[in-house]
Image (cartoon, rainbow, N blue to C red; front, top):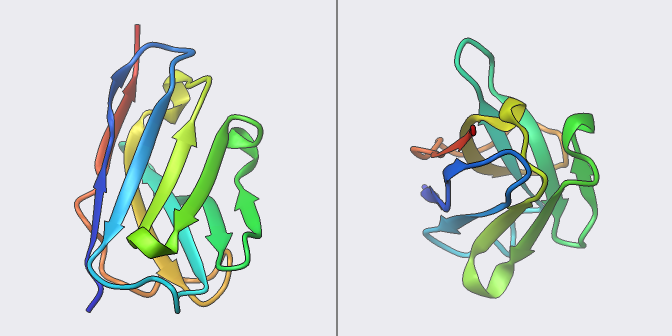
Amino acid sequence: QLQLVESGGGLVQPGGSLRLSCAASRSIFNINAMAWYRQAPGNQRELVAGVTIGGRTIYTDSVKGRFTISRDNAKNTVYLRMNSLQPSDTAVYYCNGGGSLGGSPGFNWGQGTQVTVSS
């Protein structure tokens, strides 16, 4: 079973930037879609961004133009570059993968990485 380990979160001021990393325990080359999700306190987990092997991407509306997802199949790693962070971006961020963009995640969830945006 694929294991996913997220890192790179932290406390940042509004307007700041972070880059999250998701390291997979084995090759992600045959996983068509990798994605980042987030869950804020009291809310359900939501899809933030996804990327296919071919480089097609999707983003939830609230992060378009601010976040960039990418994947490095040779390193079995998925990244999320987050710019112009807002307090509403505060959440635990998780990654997962599946057969299609926006589809159901297919693997166990990792521990996630906490992102807190506050002055």
